Image (tube, rainbow, N blue to C red; front, side, top):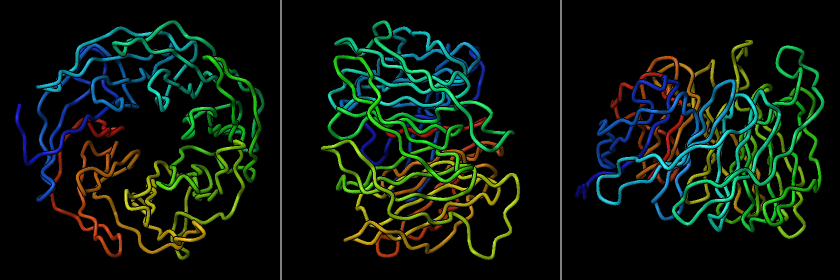
Amino acid sequence: MERPNEVLFYVGTYNPEGEEAILLCSLSPSSGEMKILEGTKGIENPSFLAVNSTGSVLYAVSEKDEGEVYAFAIDPVTKALSPLGSRPTEGGAPCYVSISPKQDYIFVSNYSGGNANVFPVNKDGSLQVMSDQVKHVGSGIREDRQEAPHPHSVIPDGSGKHILVCDLGLDQILIYRLEEGKLSKHREINLPPGSGPRHLAVHPSGQWIYLANELNCTVTVFANDEQSGNLSILQHVSTLPEQYNAGSDDTASDIHVSPCGKFLYVSNRGQDSIALFHIEGSTGHLEAVDWQVTGGRTPRNFAIIGGKLLAANQNSDIITSFSIDSDSGRLIPTGNELKIKTPVCIQAL
């Protein structure tokens, strides 16, 4: 399937097992136009996706009460998905999956289960039986959202030796050492009470890590010491404009650094915007620059693909595309929309 002028990506949704829940889509980098090419059934609520470094396997969580994680082989020509099996996560509402730098493990966080998992990967990309898991305990100050642990994301650092788990319920990033598929507690990074740490973005240089705090709509900037596996807080900054009157439905969601390393973007649900920050080149500190409405409701997730930013507007069933000004980082609507039921994750191929 030759598509010389298109970039391909997958979309995860909150669709049932009997419907096409993972969509293969194309993007025109010049116009921002998007199309659905093919859909995959057989998985319920694939709310987060990850593709391995060779583009041969896609992993997807199945966000339900008895969680599962699935592996799919990606056809080298058509990019269609073929199932490679699934494994139980032994926790409810798995909401994130990531891959180790050597592609030999995947990691899953279970939001309502309070646990994070490690699965060894076979040569064909299929998953072995879980090699280890950690179960968090405790609670935070928000009785409505922090009554229990809620691991919301899990990523390995660049070395693959340390695994970082953002726990929205505990206001902590818990850092584990990974040794032969087993996790051992390394240290805890405490966030201000009521922050609700959700997603991380690593700067291309590896020097800094940026955290989207869901509940208090802030970004935390960390200095990243990969050697020691430690994060040091440098800055907290709001994801919302100073004059904006935030309500209970205002929550930060996704976060990404531009490939050039100059810009940071964070999605705001409620205001339904993407916040733009300039990254200071020597310190990693952030300066708030702009807020671009996403053209839909509840931008749960977004991705930078083919020089465009694509926003998944969960509650209005559309993905919208934006051009990125290379000098300022500002987002310019292309006017293109892609209608997809409850889009909640965009993953480049």
